Amino acid sequence: MRNQLYLSVLISITLNFVYAQQFTPQFTGLGADGITSPYHMVAIDENTLWASASNPNGEKFGDGPNVIVHTEDGGSTWKSDTLPADNPNAFTIACISAISPDSAWVSSIDNTANYPNWDIKIYATFDGGENWQLQNVAFSDNESYAGQIHFFDHLEGMLFAASADGYFQVFKTFDAGNTWDRLPQENFPPLIGNFEGDIDNGYYAIQDTIWVPTSEGRILKSIDRGTTWAAFDTPVPSNVIFEVTFSDS
Image (cartoon, rainbow, N blue to C red; front, side):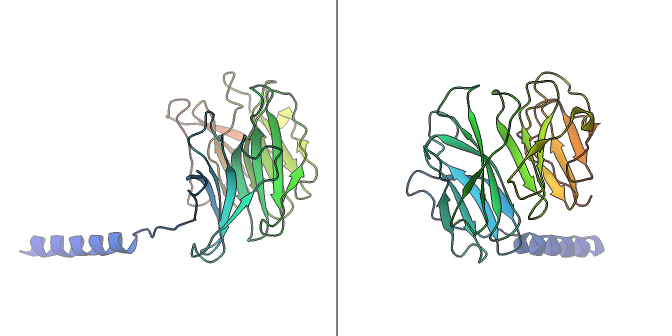
């Protein structure tokens, strides 16, 4: 009887916890123009969230309309922005980073041309998506494509790009993205394989620390806002780590 009572209490507590953790659907208004797949989200606080979305039915990933959606009232209302690309129906949003309801950055790939001649573009907004401006990044070769972008504050950010020259291609900015400089090779561990430098999986950042999974089953970690990096082996096979999450630094 005592065990049965304990089990009943445990089940009751568990059910109450599960019930309290139920998710509430949020309707963004996407779908009217074939834009039905939000795929990268950044939550600033309990009310503010930015997300990128695209048409999942294109011939290539990202074909069709690509937009940014964001909310400032916990999802009750949403605003949709289209980036000012030459052809807004033919580019892929690789990643979005936001630090406030006003400021966000997007890394994108113009795929009107065939790889490796993709055009890499970075867009930024500082007025809540009313206007998006193009930023310039000097990639080291024409076989690069934009990957993860992250800003630590209003000025300092970093960008991963695919590398074809033997070491990780990471750019940093200290002026909100107006200028970008590539970090030197000595700031990184040696690459494993030919494609470990293609960083396009989900990263995780807490304050000055950031973790990034690679295509070779390793985790890259930086504790100085992406300036210097160390690599950690994992028991996970290569090319299967898509996201990483940590509870603290």
